[in-house]
Length: 151
Image (cartoon, rainbow, N blue to C red; front, side):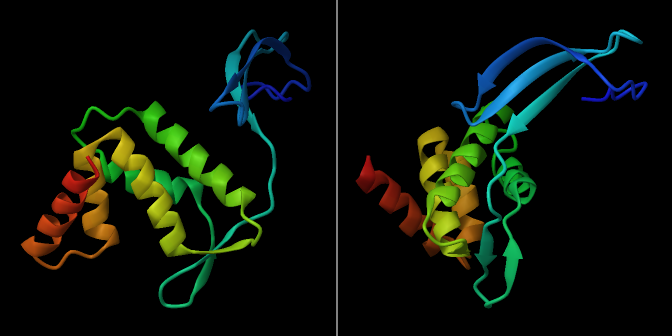
C-alpha cells in the first residue's frame, strides 16, 4: 500500500480490526519514510448489482447514492453516521446474496425502509414519503397507521 502523502511504496500496518459486522477490515497504517498515519478499509469485491428502476432504466447500485439519501432522511435526528453505514452495508450485503445480479429498485427501497424502521421513526417516515411518493397528508396518515399497527 502506497503512502497517501509521499507515495512511498510500502507502509506498515499498525492495527487491524473487523468493522461493519465483519464485512470490512479497517487498517491503521504508517509510512516508514515520512511518518504519515492513515486509515484504509478493505471490502471483498463482489459482482456489481444492477438496479432496475421503475421506468425500466438500469444503473449500477451505488452505495454512496444510498448513503446520501439516508443522510437527507436522517437530518436533525439522533441517527449517527455509523448507524447509516451499518444499514448501507447490510443492504449491500443482502443484495450480494440474492441469486440474480439485477434487482428491482422496489426491493432495495423495502430493505432500506425495514432497516430505518428499526433505527428511527422520523427518518423512516421521511424516507417513506419520498420513496412512496406521498402526494398529500393522507399518505402520511396511512403510513403512520401502518407503523402504529406494527408496534
